[in-house]
Image (cartoon, rainbow, N blue to C red; front, side):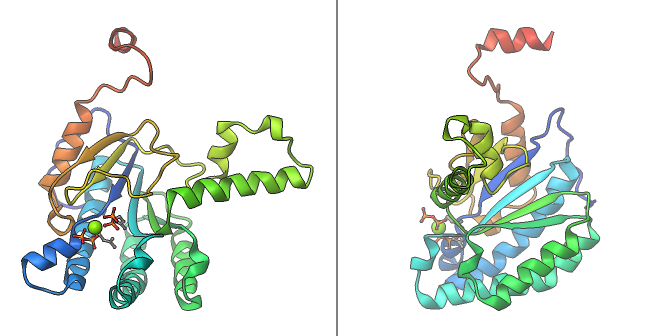
Length: 250
Ligand code: IPE
Ligand code: IPE
Ligand code: MG
């Protein structure tokens, strides 16, 4: 537990998914290289992990590197990779002490063998923990995720283990990267853009969306509390009418 005094929510989101955007602009505003923004962003990662533990959030998914981010200048991609490696190496021990279970999703085969080993080691070390599940999406793309899930089911059909007619949304769920975890209840994007940028396409079907202009390195403490407050004021109807939801509460 961190020492912040948050107001507990009656029904906190079980799963929060975040596009951590705005690091580059944060650095530019300070006339610093973009990389300094990414470095400063690590501080916000620590803060949101602690806040999620305080609020009783079960799963936190963070978009760290998209399948499209390889298009950035080589220098920035390299800097992001070494930052990722350092964080994996140093932060994981602290996460482990906080009982956090780490899971990395994405097309991991694109990473260097050294990085893949670090990922494996981090997941193995924290696998038995029972606290917050921290999911890091790295070289992740929503379209890739849907495609790999379809391919997984197609292979089962090919092998005669499954009939194509039996394929259901639930089966797709089970083949997706976030299988067995609850769907995100709250999606947050910092940095002012209002787009999904190929993040969780399948899983965000009924997620509450929250966009803020705050840049990721500034997204700490109160900024997250505001997002949680906004979530607590929403009525989730899942296709029903507002009256039905009200009646269900009585
Ligand atoms: C998000 O910040 C971090 C990554 C994509 C890795 P950006 O680097 O996209 O920051 P802006 O959008 O350029 O400000
Ligand atoms: C999305 O941010 C990816 C991550 C935060 C890791 P981008 O900054 O790459 O998104 P676009 O390209 O502006 O949509
Ligand atoms: Mg960006």
